[in-house]
Structures are given as C-alpha cells and as structure tokens.
Image (cartoon, rainbow, N blue to C red):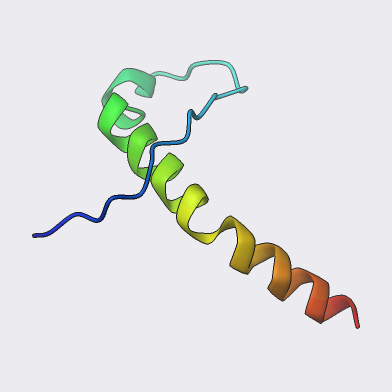
Length: 53
C-alpha cells in the first residue's frame, strides 16, 4: 500500500469518551480521518456550494 504526501490535520474528538474509545479512536485512526479531511475539504465545500445553487 502506498501513502501520499498529504499533511496531517489534527483531529479533536469533542464527544465524551465511550466504553471502547481507546480501542476505536486510535492515533492512527484519527490521523487517517485528519488526512481525509485535508485531502477532500476543498472538494467537499465546492460540492456543497454547488448543491445550494
């Protein structure tokens, strides 16, 4: 598997921790979500703007 050079975006979880918080929201998982947000935020915003037209 190859990874791209997308910079990491810090992700903050605002909800109270649940029973399996540490098991599910690992540092790697949060890093992955942050990279997705960084890679697709501009496109997501553009699509939402177009939807409002």
